[in-house]
Length: 117
Image (cartoon, rainbow, N blue to C red; front, side, top):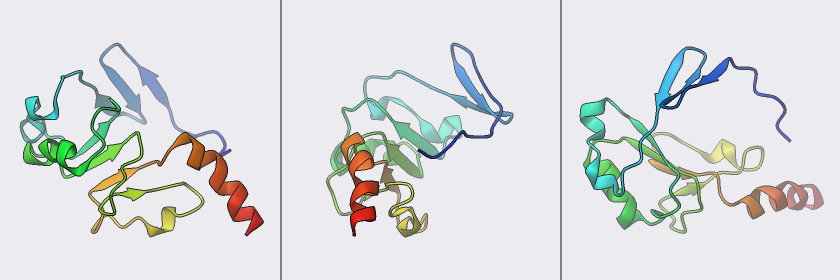
């Protein structure tokens, strides 16, 4: 839908490298176990599917994260659910510290609804 991403990407067991920017990953049971500040992490990708409310995401911020991108919808007005090409212009990093890519259903349906409107 969005075309090919024109970046140099490689992966190892512990990292993902995109255009020489190394991204690491972890597998802790709870966000309050990770010291994001000590690790120098500003943006966390929360992809467990377990932490989808402001209360359960708060430990990421308490431990030093500046922003959390959630790989599932967060049903709270404080989080922005972004559908690329539909409402991504509404994202403001100064206002939004929790962002999601909405749901797979939303991402499939929103472009069709936008066309109909």
